[in-house]
Length: 134
Image 1: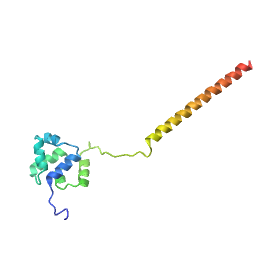
Image 2: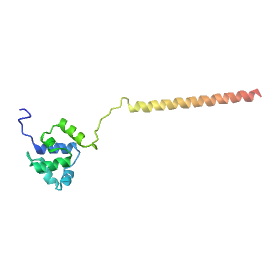
Image 3: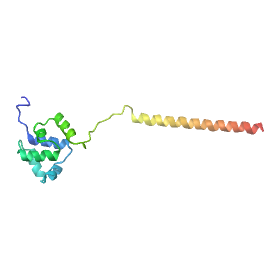
């Protein structure tokens, strides 16, 4: 069955968009001046009247058309282009093992101490030469 011939479930689309916005039903209900149960009813409805759809769309920060034509790919584009405060989470994997960095820093610190100790030994040796020379 092609996507074009399958009827859209508007309530499911609203639910998915709300979830993508990281919004609870209670928050959407508050934005619409209603209660959580009403949002649950809307999200379980296959259709919704255009006036209510426009209100829900505004509360979600998307267009009514975006809800009607929902798909994961297009809605993410719509949300990011309509809401500059949306922060896109990017899972950045470091190209290094953080534990290796800790070990590397420890080794550098060790080398620094060794150089410091050697400098002190050289200084003591130099002072001993001066004292013996007198």
